[in-house]
Image (tube, rainbow, N blue to C red; front, side):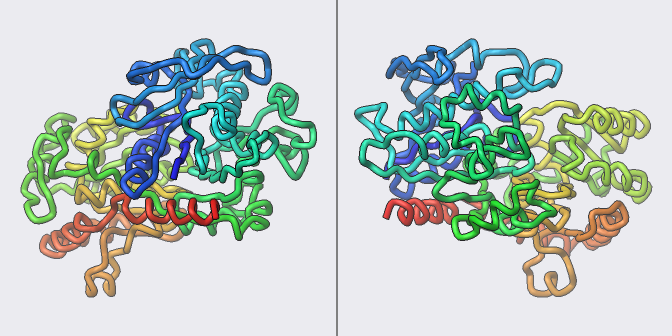
Length: 482
């Protein structure tokens, strides 16, 4: 089964969040169960640099009149066949894939990512005479116009199934309506039954409305986004498409996230031989200037620093955590006020709090390997990979019980401790008080060393790889083709 995956990012070449991890791992998992996957990506500099055996497939004229080259080759880091849109004037810029150096959205993002969807549709319609997909699987708002271009484009008599995956409904790709006329879509597409969203142009809505099937990255999130509380104004459309909506839980690339083989951590360990974890903890405490205290419970945050991630709650309980002997390490960037607030706490408590602004993949691995608890107090969380990385590395997740966090974390309540299913801690109310109670329960269990070791061992032995998710995607593809 030939599958074209369309995304703006892919690990390890370009990553701003969990989307890249999934885009990097899913093709290999699908290939392992009988698919032939190729990926389509924008020509960002790291992607172009990794493209091997490259050749020009064709030159294209975008709907708004720009000429671009479509190259094909193999991504050397992943060994995956790839199509890459070679348009330096659109993709080679300072800043992130989405924002300039001043953290402002690039002025022409609508064109940069409309092009991604348009080229995907051209490939689905036979642009490459030697390879045509049966399924086009697009991810998040950057690739959402794929489904719209497919809906209005010729398929040469052959049906191509379209799947659209929502990684985070809150990021919708909304633009001024004047930009609709650049896209080359018929005027009928700009309507309530189309791309129009409260007078604006919504890429996300295009994916939700026109795709044959919508998936989210966890079963609970698929239900939550059909409610006004988490539907971000799109819950009505999602309820109307409930029969075409399902949640497939994300997984962990165990070739990358495995403490027994991880080259990024100073000492290897696994569930049955956990001694290396204590040595990783001591090494990180020394690296970050924290007090080297083996019995101090070490909490970790690896996250975008945004209100959605609930990090203002962490700031609210931090003094109590420190007073009870805990330490905190933070890695991430985002909201300037949150960055400043965490840095100020690190300056005030240098032996108990360490903050690194930015993202460092190797440092993230060291944090999971060293910490006792991974904090994920998100207001909402489509799936979350952080808590899964915590499980793999024996850093018990402490989470707000929403979305994929609810699907993966079993609280250390007495009944779950008794039956051996506990693997972390959760709280229901999105308040500092609720988080503080969960932190105190984590500290209480940490003091009971033998119980803590049993829970940690169970957490590390859980099956979190891609086999199950890949099988679910293949079953979905087969159903749509049939």
